[in-house]
Image (tube, rainbow, N blue to C red; front, side, top):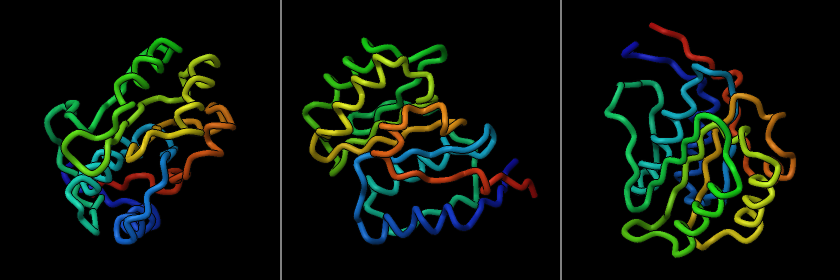
Length: 165
């Protein structure tokens, strides 16, 4: 599992965003389990923070567990994301980044947001805090509230299934 070949289209899209330094407020990484969306999100976030113009998804190396830092927040909830969770997240991000140029929030399994949570999250997408980027991860794009997916730049991992070498 040390070397994984990703679909070049996904890598080209992310590298184009890094090179141009034109970031959307929200990205929706969607694709099946095993497409390494979480690794791509982490690499993309690190590249933004380090002001790199290129990332490589082709040399996956298992790393330590992902931890929150002052400007990179991993939001995971195994069951469902409730409105209280989103309100707490909004409180956490309202002042923007502390040390880096962007505050990046990676939300895992965003399709598990309740309707109330999704509607509360829409407020953050419609009036995003300055210099905050959301990266939403899902296995099923159709399970995400359409108003959320329409306000996010969708990055397709469906055709980027991993090939083990």
